Figure 1 (cartoon, helix red, strand yellow):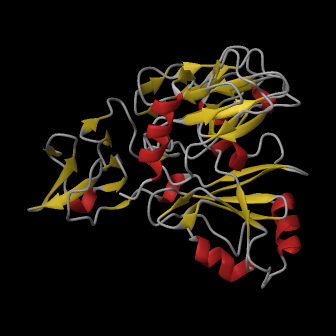
Figure 2 (cartoon, rainbow, N blue to C red):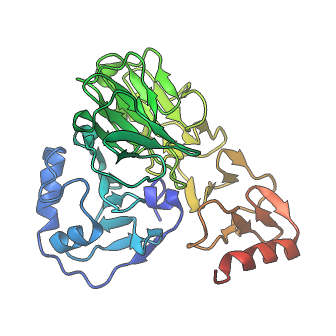
Figure 3 (tube, rainbow, N blue to C red):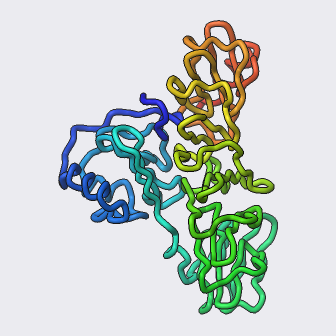
Length: 355
């Protein structure tokens, strides 16, 4: 697998697709988006994997990472189509750094839609008895003074004609007329950039752009963004980190909100991998990566790991929040720590047994 691909990054590999049955000429569409990246018709953001296959036929490859039985990446030639982990699994990213460099995402200007949900769903807004509520972790909170007819929302972002909201919290100073959601982690108006951890001070609003869909593999808000001067990483817990030393012009997220790169460095979870050799670095899966000399877990080197024999052993369909397992010719690993073989095998057995 080629270094730097989001699918390799996500770490679940590729599987070959069925015999190609092209319905619309993909090459014509590819040339179209290279000339005008905003013209992705007949595709549109939010459509499903099945709808894409109906248009282009079977892909050349699909990621082995799936949600509800659907692959989260379809690959046609050198272009990857990425789909949201959450139902209805809509298209959110068109990506390539193979023969071409391409990253097209939907700007969520139209995702703030009139509220219609009448059932509480964790971390989303809903209607009850003629009022708007937010379904929080421990209780449902009433949005006082907000009329349902005057309220639009998407996930945990919302606004009325007089106020903007992150969950049940009013965003002080936010401007509803210009407020729009960029992805799960970021929103913007004419005054500021907002995240689920607060505002980003001094962000350059006109140049600000998100670099992925803003949601990590456990469903939490997380992701990279940049303006013309700085690169940002938001991990959903605490202040947004400014990545010092990043080359802004070439910086790009690799798609899963954990890993990124520019022309000089590899980044993992918002930090540089200072020893990583850019030309030989590759993702192995489940947060493991390696280059010609070393093995890494997220942004930490696994000291003493044998690069050539190192293999990721976490099952493809393992639960999202389990510890990750790997081995080499000398050791067994849980995340980045050496583990006794018997305990390691027991952990692997628990992951692979039927629920």
